[in-house]
Length: 188
Image 1 (cartoon, helix red, strand yellow):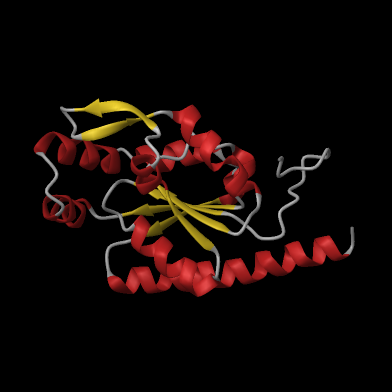
Image 2: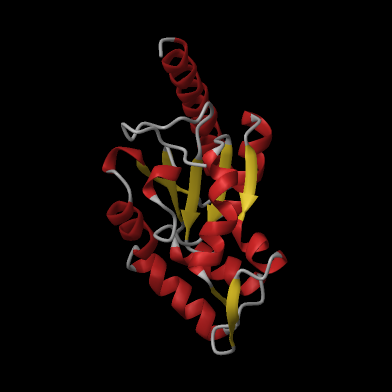
């Protein structure tokens, strides 16, 4: 099932949002509350990878599963093509451009991020790698290279106030995008 017509336009009735960022930036928390507020369905990719063995093994040094990109895309294709999804994952280049109407990249101050990663019990290699990724804006650059500029939005995620502001923006956007998609369908 394709989510695009012959003209390349989306056939989805509801938008899809990708929330991405370095581990510890608040992706899953924002995705969960956004799904509740917008009535879109949250897909936690990290949990899906674990639950459905969408990996090719385990990396001891960084204490993480090694993602199998093909298995993941195959698993998500039909779900995402239906629309109405908020997908959260720490990487974005694996996903086809056609899947998303909005890509949010969460950014967090390095001191705050460090404390969050320590609190999660990450080993020092994993903490250093993630802090370096945030410093060098790896996920932001990945998003900018993988998706159209107009759908990639960088958001700060340092505090509860930031999360509330980001939630409000997602609610406003999803209402506008939902109206635009409904209007488009009505006139086709």
